[in-house]
Image (cartoon, helix red, strand yellow):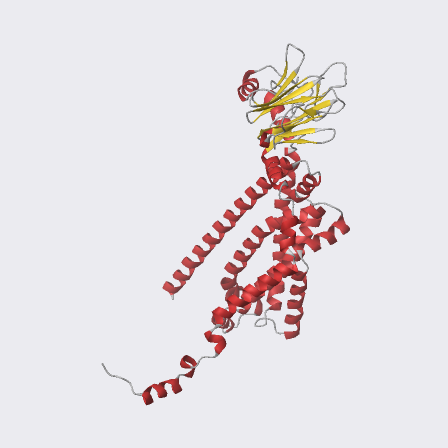
Length: 455
């Protein structure tokens, strides 16, 4: 094996200094990148006061919000200062106008027992005393001394206030006891009255009973078939508002499609005048490119705010916001695609003496149309998500409905319902867009291969 002399090594180093004498920043760029990223993260932690924000956040509310997404609660209240103890339910209780749940039991001795989690967690009471059973413990409470008093040790799941005793029983609910009332919160998994609300004649019936009524039962509403009545009751469910929700969801889809389509139609001809290799005027190219930048720099949400002031709340404002945004986005995308075409096909068409329009038609469009369609499909998919966001500022669609449900801070199951619908729509349109792009790519590949074989 031949060895190299010092002079030969030095000669090689002189010939290739970029390899043997690299600048310090090139040798240590990974370390510099890591150090820069760490410094930036430290700066972000300080600038946004993240430790303080995390420390002061109300994390205890998170389980409550999550539970409200997938469950509902019933809140019977028992007044102890009335001649007779009777349960009272909220006006819009999920149990309907005449509730009689089997977990509220009137005992033969005149006391009431409310089973919150079967017999394992319950409260039994009359006007003089209450007894809470949970976690294998029995907590007696006296109500005769002007304020509720726990007799015996107080466990950690019971909180004693001056005039109220609160028993937290986990996910299944809680009990609040004062000298003049007992209030119970009992939680159930699922969504109450999702199919039929309390006004429907099908309310409270099992699936088998509903099916039997639809197939062969007597008409519940004269002149209307039970099938039509059931469909109407579902669509006009007052609690879940399926009809309004699905209509708003359709508005969101139409807003995204219409805004993207109109934006593409306007951006298509403008992009040819903006592409510097096609337009004869450099000034016109720069003016149009700056116009596209302006249209893109104003966020879709800002456009939506402008148009809700101009047209009022509704899907027209949302469609206009998407339209204006897409003029800038698609105009820039289209023009850049045109500037990166291969000039040989265009020069070949020009050599035949064809006019400018035919040159673009046969020398340019076959090369850029697949890119145009692919980018437009991607923007359509993206705008389906964006249309939900701009709806929250009054631009119509499911976003407005979602914001209205969130503002009440007590309708989180409906919020989750609309979030799931939005996710489903985005998932479906994402797959449709991907499928169309794959088909387009395959068609283009086959076309190019055929052209090569013929050539």
